[in-house]
Image (cartoon, rainbow, N blue to C red; front, side):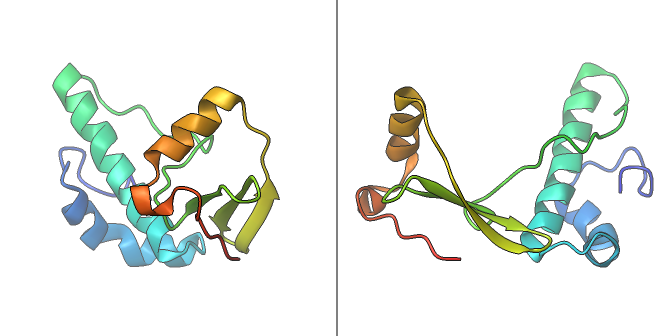
Length: 118
């Protein structure tokens, strides 16, 4: 995506309109993964522009997640992740500091009743 759009383009909506369908089908992504990838490219381009440097590239070492791609299931200490092969649910052992940080980041109505489904 970064290589196939004008380097000066930093608007996530513009990048998304030019690349969404192609990357979604080429990499078999769910919609939110494609949208988050477009937003990440835009954010990295903006940061590079502010520093006066070009974007070097992107490594497949991480991804940006939103509430639909990553869900913390407080009731059973699992996480639910959207993948290109469907939703996966995995056990997660957390350090107490991280556990409380996640609880504090949930909307008030969700604390103690966070529901998770596959």
